[in-house]
Length: 155
Length: 89
Image (tube, rainbow over the protein chains, first blue to last red):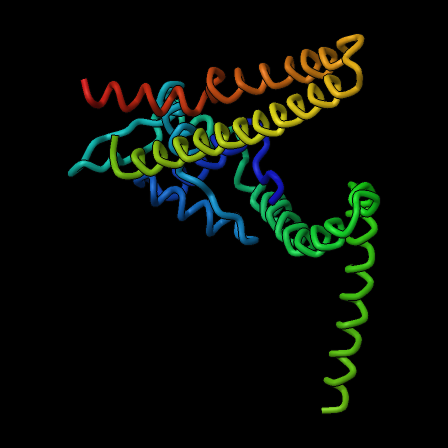
């Protein structure tokens, strides 16, 4: 799966989530991100927890320990950052990136099988091939759509 | 550190273990190849010790990989470790 978040974006979106929800524990933030990004993207605690620690260090987020669980909420500086960043209109592009990653993932095993045959074939499977395959899939999906809509007319 | 922090810690540990396993695989391939080359050199009338070129050339890459696998730490890993220490103290 390709990278969904670019440098600094994960922190920005966490701030956006907290700005929307108010306060939340780490696991809740992870689930919320997963839902908003969609596209089969799976967030990992190993990335989100350090991002929260970094936000805490930067004074944008404040953590309060309640019954052994850390609850995070924005500080005043965090709320100002949320108002400035406009991360809320970035969800669509994150979703798109996540979906593109999914598509590649589906083609991946196919290419692996093709490449396993010989070293020559292995050299053929590069970024150019990915683009070509994307093109073929796009055409195929158009044809499948036409096929299905024809069925619609009949029934 | 709460449960979520523990999850993060375990995930980072798993990644570190995976990184070390990749290094050992690389090292095994390197070592086997070098032994093979030295045998070929010894059998082929053992003149000029040409096997030292792959030995040192590839050796530098293996050494760099070892540094990456055992010394270099991801900033996220350092942050999580620090949080755990602060929590324990």
